[in-house]
Image (cartoon, rainbow, N blue to C red; front, side, top):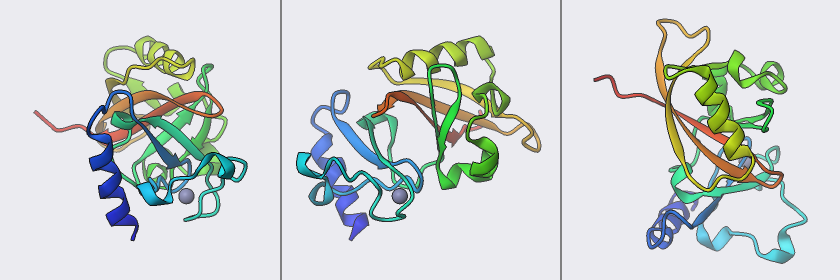
Length: 168
Ligand SMILES: [Zn+2]
């Protein structure tokens, strides 16, 4: 059910990917299908139907490509407010990550200052989606990743989707 719904949502959004928004769960990362998307009258109840733990947020369609992604949600002062279950394998369990400073978890090959600036800009509502090369602090073998950074909310924050970087 959910797989079919997600595919349909992707097709619907392909018209204007830069302006379309996608909903996602802050915990399990599920992207509901078009028919499951909540209407305005449902907005008060924003807890995820799938895992029952996460809150439904929205972000730019291009920022989150599939359900179950590894991501962090970060405030404009770089405090982590949510970590998806798939991201725990990278940065640690939710209990140790919530409230941590982003720069204690990730560092950026182009400088931590750029990572901090892009994250703060997204958390303040920037509409563009930025990609930066990052490494996960403490990861064995200095594994390289790509962080896709975009605004999300409400409440307003930065979504950092972390995917393995292709080695070149
Ligand atoms: Zn969920």
